[in-house]
Image: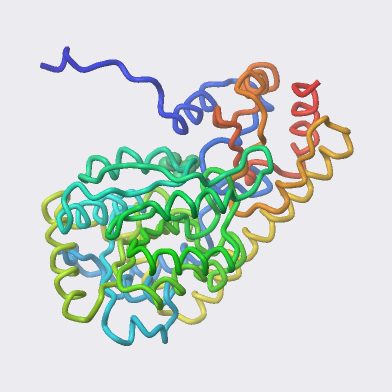
Length: 397
Ligand code: LMR
């Protein structure tokens, strides 16, 4: 039977990572996959994670199963990070959360749960979005549609057309929103835009499905949760998916969650039981190690403070690199104005160059980025920024 399977093109993002790894050039630069890199181009284990890991290994005395919904301490910690300790929906018992294998696992569980509650329901994805949203949510049983999001010419959120499109959506349909650090464009909603979108969801009966895989990497842990908190306060139902890959650097441990705000505490109990049942039917239980690390960090005030500082350092460095790249490109008097890069947030921005220019950067200059010209800002450092700017200026000539 397997001979009937069709050959596939390389993955849009991970395919570039494979090409980068295969390039023997000593000066190659990786601006592709969304993984944080430090000044030396490494992705080290956070010091807070190392300490938590050590403590866990010392005290762990069993490898028996934890639970279908994962580590309860982790789920509580995620809820506090997302909504804040005193959020009215949390106090009212309207929120339930399950630990999942990474953010992708969270999208899958949330998608399946929504499709179980409302078979074939439509979800609107932002145009453009993370390419894995489509297969994950389609397989889960949802119908996919899109709303305009990014204005490529003006390098900003295309908010009026976005609202106009969503105004035509039907009650009960879902809207996938990037909570912060939009992947791939880096252009986030302002507070006013979150407020307008919340009002629209309220008026039209739309359900937000928020993917906040990068909390803490835009403006701060609290600041980045603005939209989640607002919507969870004003709307009866919200779905929120998180990841600890980026903000805790736990990529390969696969730590994430799916969190559901329900209309009332009774509905929240039903949601929790059904989310666990969906997970049971897919992978039975999530892996423990990464979530145990995160739970330990969330509950230990010294470790939490150390982690918050490490996250602040990552964020500050990213925002500094954005400014530096803009300055370097401006100094080369490129025909394009790249000042928008400094205003965007998180790991990614679109350079806005052509596919041919992206290929030239790769083949002539050994600089790797996704074909759409999405760059991972963290791949830039003080040692390579001049080469990056020279190469971009060269392909724009
Ligand atoms: C990315 O967008 O580069 C990351 O989220 C990694 C991935 O799995 O695509």
